[in-house]
Image (tube, rainbow, N blue to C red; front, side, top):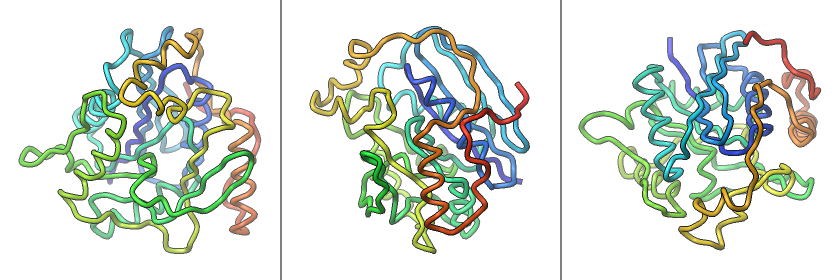
Amino acid sequence: MSHVVALCPTYRRRRLVNNAIALFFRQTWSEPMTMLVFDDGENALLNFLYHENKTVMVIPFTERFPTLGAKYNSLVDYACDKLRADYLFIWEDDDIYLPDHIEKYMKCFQAGAQWVKPSLIYTYFGGRLEKVDPHFSFFASIAFTKSVRDQTDPVYFIEDHVVQFDIDFMHKLSRKYGSPHDPIEDGEPTYVFRWDTTEAYHGQGFMHLGDRWYEAVPYATQPEPAMPNRPVLDEDSIRVLRLTREQRNEDSFGCLSGKENKVQT
């Protein structure tokens, strides 16, 4: 039985993490899955949540990782070495993953894919949901296998202060495996990129600083108090789930309330 691990780095965005957990708990894939959260913000708490076949592990760090690339490398290493992950999904805390996201991607992996990237995604700006061609962007929509850490030709994120560390990683995947498999068979995306409606800072808002963007975030944001994690959908996600359900004419997206799921902690 395969093990899926969703990789979620976070810093001073705990409310968004709660939303990301709620979206993870709504995934329809039926085999074991773990959402691995690395929180290097102040007052982070160790936390474990369980729901059906899903586990969420929130691991706190007392010091901030030097770069986001270094943080992702640590996430991948932990997932492969300690959780024995077979498939790794990027799971950004501020984006929206529809309930069949992992299930659609797993069909590609079962067909032999080594990495997966969709040919269509949704963007959500100013309350408008639109389908767009992501080209070679939107790193948070990808997934890949544990073979990125094989001993003969491992693939790592660049750990320098480089804005396009994510694009660099995807180019490395392309060189190693060729073009990604596309999970979009029915014209319906499962990944939603959002920016201006999260009520939290967004990395895109720092891109004008170039390679200094990561270092600037602590000076432009406020520390958060300790906050236990709970799966709670935010208003954006409720709205997007309703819109996509209406477009697909489906009833499989579950109860769309902002209330907490019943989970074990």
